[in-house]
Length: 139
Image (cartoon, rainbow, N blue to C red; front, side):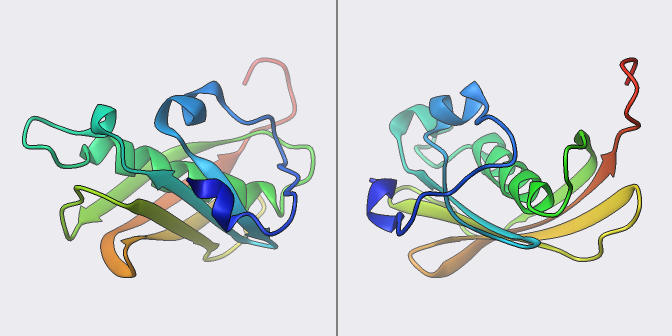
């Protein structure tokens, strides 16, 4: 599965969410402002026509963005405030790879672009914006 992608141990900036295990998401690369995550096809991720559900791809894209942001934000909490995705091709097998790159690191707002591919074909393109939360217990 995705283990064949792993070249070195990656230290995540936050504990892996349990949701990733449900979807089969793994981090394969992380660098400053960049992350690559993979999600293998599984019938549990499909919609009624046997294609990967858009929500699963959306979650993969959002997760890749979070890891890219975590690579440049030290000890701060951050959350998605908006996201858009274009689904370009259907997926019914293989491994989906999401590559996220920070567009610009602001003081509180960080936009990210994400490409999702399958068999080296672009299947979805997403953009998202995260906000860095204030360090109080209320947010």
